[in-house]
Length: 609
Image (cartoon, rainbow, N blue to C red):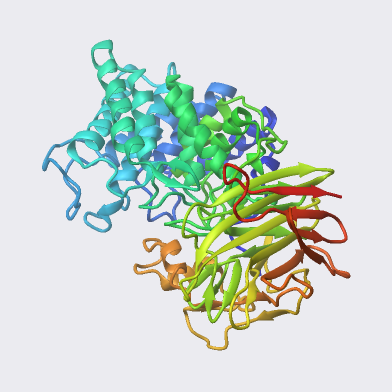
């Protein structure tokens, strides 16, 4: 089974002018065939996210006319714009809408669904989207529509802005992408308003960004991020926020958007595997945006010098939003326009700077969470997630059902590259159920094709083993598919265990259920509203690789050694000396220093071929 949303890397989508002209030509033919006598360009199957979609297709037609001067387009633009102004502008309060600050304001807004009171909660983001479609039209309709229509369009855009920022609470869904999108709409609107209004709208947009978005950023993995649906980062919406930050910087020149975009981009680069796989989020775990991410990933890949385009998008939305039959939907039309307008080229080489929360070389990568426990391991084309035992998630030593990976104190990290090897040593103080403080030293070494993980800890009671991951997915090139096995070898006995019980809080990798669906089943609210990250934390047990202690370890230590990504003999040797623990494998010799570290308490590590 393939994961439905993680498909091809987004930098594989052709982004030449000729490719975009072909996209716009297809949009033109679809729209001209679809337009109704009254000017409606909505997809006939659209129900949700509909209030801005006809206007979105109109904006694409106006943009196409700018580039081609196709004589069929002016009439279609005028007719479809008239339809939106006549049929899709609402000024009566939507029954049941919960986020109004001013009742009966008579300011215009767009509806998420057209029926009054049917689903009013989505009206705020739908109005943001409608504002963006409107300002894009204002940018492209000179000489295309008459003064009366253009004046009405400008008044509508200003009304949308006022409804979003005066009549309602700002950002009621705590969705960073929606909020930054609103700011972008204000910045673009300001360029079309008379000077006496323009400065006020621009200043208000910058104020909202500083006070309502930036001041409420959430820290994750050392980075401050715009919150997304109550969490720090979401795989679908995070890259869309990055695109909004790119557009905000493009239209305003304000460095605050570039700085915050750089931070978010470096965070994405660190959590993203070499193969572009990632999972996790407070709204969607594995659903990925498509073309909506391209602008931000491309713009900031160049700024930070990283190959962010390896991010796997939903390439069914490779060019624009579509319905089930593949027909165009205008919902994200503004992003396609900005993507075409921006001439930034992809940066395709990996970043050279060391990242605390990532180890990466060749086809091997490890993305670490905020506690410096692996969140995703990639080796040999297989992706391993953190496994679960007794409601505890991670990679690390287990004894008597207790997983030793949650730090009780400062986590220290040492990075080292030499002789074609890349390594990261993580030292954690950990307290077990016996209340004894131990130091878990985890060494990760890769030659670009294989990954060695060696974990040393003061001797544990009972019969400890290493929880070494949940094999979950594999790279098929243009698709990611579910798996339940991988190429893993251990110095001690290695077993692949599966939950015995068939329960929703037990995840068996052999099943066809995706991690996202399993997480939603454990979330407190319905799918699409529940927090899958929170739901996944309720997982009790999962498929897991379990490695016994390596033979030949010094008597006062338990040492575990695992190799990912290659088959064949694996017989590491260990020796404890004055410099620390020496680890010898078929590929390298490493010396892991004592937990106390150097004179500043930093981990000591030496490594050679």
